[in-house]
Length: 190
Image (tube, rainbow, N blue to C red; front, side, top):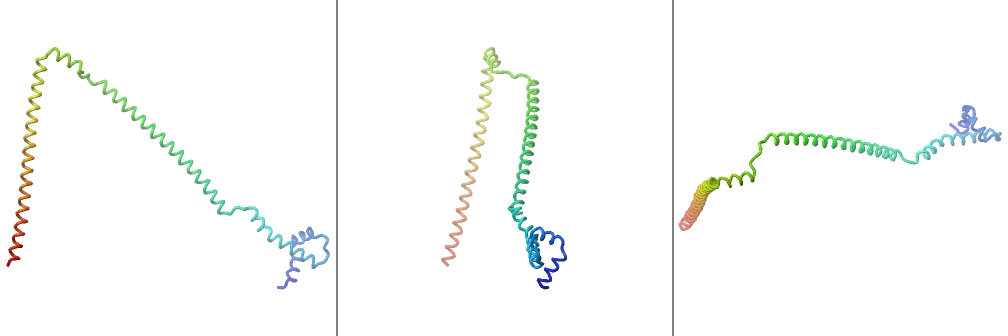
């Protein structure tokens, strides 16, 4: 196809191009210059949206997606933080309620317990019954002494047995090692 044929098709076929050509160049009367102007106008129209789209969105789609992702991440972080705060508050409330239950139970048990004799009661009893306190002290001393003697005898026996066992083991090991060395010497002497 030739350029003149293309210009002829533009000239006769498209009304919008001729309307734009009349707006752009109303004073041109020659068909060749009119066709050239119309071709230039059509070229401008064809390239104009590409130029406009480049100037309209100076930021790339990657930057737009990155910004959207950052916004979503920030919103998700805020939601997770709020959820963690609510969860922490719920756990703390549960802990405090359970601690209060334990405190109440402790108070009820402490109120139901009979009071034990204190130091004042013992001193009063000791002042009233000195012979009984002396007898109890002697009995406690004798019992403790007997228990300590039994423990000392058991510890001595255990120590003695452990020592004898170690001596026996060392003697056996030395005997076996000496026997083997003697065998090797005798076999080497032959």
